[in-house]
Image (tube, rainbow, N blue to C red; front, side):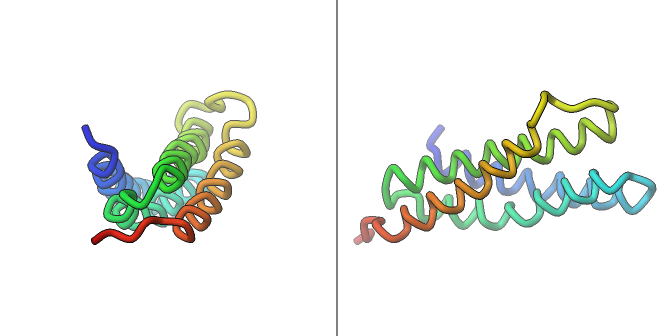
Length: 118
């Protein structure tokens, strides 16, 4: 499967899961559920937009992949804390948060040097 399709599909799934988790949070879910829902919803349109521009170079591909994994790690850890009563693994949320920052920075640099599509 092409990477742009993976990004688009992931963005769409992030949106769907984010809406579902927002509903769960409003019906008694904890703060971690609401936070995870917000991060999924914030990044869903970004991943969909990135699926349209990743042809610009490897740094955009890598930055988008880092962002995808980091959001999953961050939100997954918060959800595991609420629903399973334990973390995914030690420092999963901080690593995911740092990964989101790095992913966004890679996208910024990648966008600066992206090749223009004809």
